[in-house]
Each structure stands twice: as C-alpha cells, then as structure tokens.
Length: 467
Ligand SMILES: *Cc1c(COP(=O)(O)O)cnc(C)c1O
Image (cartoon, rainbow, N blue to C red):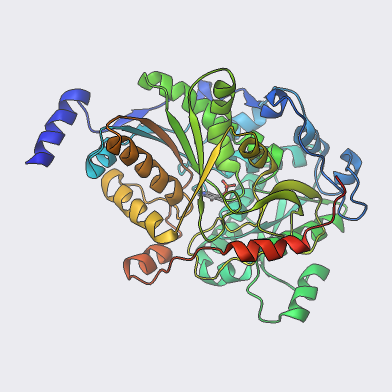
C-alpha cells in the first residue's frame, strides 16, 4: 500500500516514469573546458624520470603528438574541438541524461536522482570521448601506429575503434589476467583491427624483465604502461596513448559535464551533488570539472569521486611525486598515489585498479574543491543490481561505485529530513563484465580494504624529489 501511495504521489508530481533529456547533435560542445586556466596556481611540474628535472615539450615528443603535448600544458580556458572530432563524436553524442524515477521509487527516496549515460558509445563507455581526439591528432601529425595498455579492455577497445576511424594501427598490451578472463573485449579490439598482446609480454625489455623476476606474473596496469611506452619510444612511426590520468584526457572528457549542465537546465534543476566513479580520474573529471567552475563562481555544489576500498588512491594515497608506470619509465607527476609498485588485489572484480589519481583531480582534492569516498565492492554490486532492476541498464562494475554513492547521498538526505538533487555519471554498461555479476550473485565476492600500512611502506619506493 505504501508503495502504491508513493507511486501515485510520484505520478502526480511528475506525470511520467521515464524522463530523458536529449540535446540535438548541433549541441555537441564546440570547446573543451580547461580548468587549469582558472585554478590560480600553476600545476606541479612534470619531471623527467631520469634527470628529475621539469620536462619540456621536446621530452614528451617521442610519446605524444605536438597538439596533445600543447593541450597537456595549456593554460587556455576554451580549447576548440576540431570538426573532424565532433563529427565522430556525433555517432553517439550528445549522450542522454535521465531522471531515475524508478530508482528513486525502488529506494524510497524523496530526493531527485539524475544520471548521464556514457554507455551509448560504440565501445560502451566514456573512453571514446578522448580516444577519438587522440587518434585524430596523431593521424594529423602523420603517426602510423599507436601503442597502448589496457586493463579490463575498455580503453583498448575504445582506442581501437577510434584509430580505425582515422586509419591508424593499434598495438594493445592487455593485462594478462584480463586477457585470460575477458576474451570478448580482446575480440572486440581485434574486430576493430588492433593487435593485442598479454602483458607482461616478451616484446619489450620491461616485459622481459618482469617475466624473469616473476614468470607467473598476472600483470598490472603499471607494467602494461611500461611496455606500451617502451614500444612507442623505440619506434619512430609509433606514439603512445593513455586513456586516463593526464590533463588532456580529463580535458577531452569535459564534454560530459558541459552537456550535463545544459540538460539539468532543461530539467529545471541544479545538482546539490555531482558524482563520478574514480579509477584514474577521467570520467569523474569529465562530469565534475564544468561544475567546479560553477563552484568557483559561487554556486553551491559538491563534487564527489567514488573509488574502490581495494584501490583507494584518493582516500588513502599520499599526494606526492611518483612514476606513472611500474618500472619508472614514464614522467614523474604529482598525484595521489598508492606507490607505483602497487599490485591490485586479485579478488577485486572490476576495473579501477591504477595506483595513482589524475594530477588534476589530485590538485582539486588538495584545494578542497572536490571530495572522495571509498566503497567495498559488494556494496557497489548491490547498488548496481538495484539500479539495473529499476532503470534497466546494467552498470559497468566501475560505474557501480558512482551508483552506490548516489543512492547513499539520496538516503542521507532522507535521514536528515531534506531532499537533494543528485547527479551521477554512469560511465559505461557492464555487458562484458557479467562474469563479475555472476560471482556477486553467487556470493563469491569478498570485500577487501587496502591496508594503510601497505601505502606507508610503498612510500619508501617513491622517487626522491627535492621540491
Ligand atoms: C575505465 C573506466 C573507468 C575508470 O576510469 P576513469 O579514468 O577513472 O574514468 C570508469 N568507468 C568505466 C566504464 C571505464 O571503462
């Protein structure tokens, strides 16, 4: 009976059970928003792994095309999105924004919950937003091949799709455990024309070194990055592409938040809290950063990054200079880190296993402009199943961290006798991660909290920087 009354109230208020806010293709943003222009203090320098001196554009030239290097260091507020990039984004952008009426009912909240859905892209996540831009700039500068790493396969498949659009070859180093457990992501990359190797591989010095030390290594994102960087650095026609963490990646993802701002206007509401799951930081940065600009201009809005308790770079990591990869080949950046030799616990089902957080997100956290929470995986899958049964979409395990945080924000408001407008980014669907759902439904998933002592001892391995 209570349910019926709630339903009637709901219908009375809204008159509908599904509200989708769609923008026409002409409303794909024409500029990315570069928050570095508005932060007041410059970002920490990026350091050379050998000399530990600040790097200049020429140091990064073996790895990235000049246009990307310029964006990485740019202080320009609005950066134009090339027509060729907008054209490909138009395959699936603007993405829809939904009011989660059915979820609100299912959890019995009076708060309003909205979600931006990035799973409508060809590879099923937000990652093509940057993959398309990176492939375009590389092709324009005459690069023939891109080398990259992938964990669960989301980034590798997104780059494979994007590179195919611009006629580039792609070599993917895929973390060995995922190569074995996620064969269909590998198939997808191969359908789009990529060559895929299980990492650690015997193709690189970095891979061979790890295999010598630990022949049974299941790999890690840090190791795969070392292999891809080495491949790019040792081949003239090849550059490297990274799917998260770096400034230009966060920049390309701002299309998410810029569209969401317009769509919340259509809904006639402004969010009290904006949430994204956090692995390397790109989808969180993408939805949050345009709202951080509002916040700096006096708007009242909270930005919350939701990360796994098993890989808690924002909530337990230290804000320090560290390498981006496992063996110390990449530039050193200042970020929240668990230490570059972090080995993700094998029991964790989803992605989000990188040792560091985006320098940009780390800085926003340090400045108190954003917040972070950490959740154990079972609570996230529980939220994802509730969401799927109400809204229909099966979230990616990564995205489930945002779903959990959104439900908790709504419930907290109920407990406080208030209501909140909650907006979260549903960064992708979970169609390739049903094995993880199987394990959850069978009661086989364990929670694991990464110990603070492990973070403390990893800090001894950080590069020594006199800054
Ligand atoms: C890769 C991925 C993430 C994590 O990466 P971020 O850079 O933190 O966004 C989150 N969700 C999905 C669906 C992903 O594929």
